[in-house]
Length: 298
Image 1 (cartoon, one colour):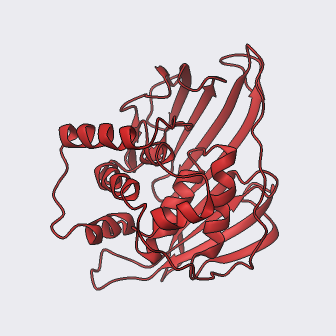
Image 2: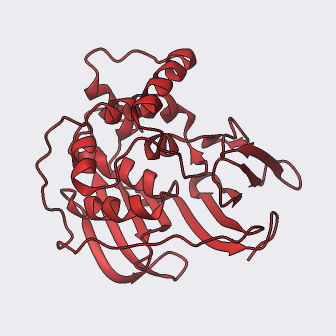
C-alpha cells in the first residue's frame, strides 16, 4: 500500500529527489537553526523505514511554510474551546514513563517499547524494547542523550528509528493554533491527520498538544466521537479518518482511528484498518506514568 505521507511529500516537490542521509543532516541543521532553539520533547516510536526520509523532507517543508495561507475547514468535530493541558512535574529521581505496545495483527507480531524520560529532556533517556515472537531474548536496552537512539531493533513491518520524524517536527512547530495552520498548509488536506497524530503521539508537550488537538478537529472528513472508550477500555475521544484508494492497486482504501485522553490530549491508542474487505492491520496502545527511577514500572 502506498503511504499517503509519501504521496503528500511528493506533491510538495516538483521532482522529488531521494534524500541522502548527508543532505538530510545538513537540512535538519538549517531547520534547527531557524527554529530559535526549540528543544525536542518526544521519544522514538515504531515507524516504517520507508517513511523516514520522505517525512524528513516534510519536516523541512513545514519549517519553511510559515508564510503559507491556510483556510480552516470544519471537519467532523464540533468547534471546541482551546483546551489547557499540563505535564507532570518530576522530582529529582523521577522519570516520565511511556509504554508503547504495537501489534502487527496481519503477521502476529508485537513490539513493546518502554521509555524512561528525565525531567531535563536532553539528558539520558533509557528504553527497553521487546519484540515477539522473533526478538532478542530478554529484549534490548538503549541509552541515549535527548532520546537520540538512532536505528534500533525492528520487525518485518517496520524499523525502530530515532529520533523520529515526529520529534523532528516537534522541534520546529509553533505552539499556537494559527501558526500550526500555516505550517500544516504545506501538507495536502487528506494527509494532514497523519502528521498531526504522529506529532501528538511523539509525545508532544502540553503546550503543543492543545493546539494540535484543536487543529485535528478541524480537518475535513474527520469524524469525532466524544465520551467513548479506547481499544483497552479507557475513557477517550475518538478521531477517525479514511483514505480513499487510488488507481494504483497497491494503494488500498484504509481507515485510521486515534484515541485521545480527554483530560490531557495524549494519544492512548490507534487502530489502522484496510477497507474492502475490512481488516485490522495494526493496533497500538500508549500508557503513561510517573515512576521513581529508571527501570521502574507503574
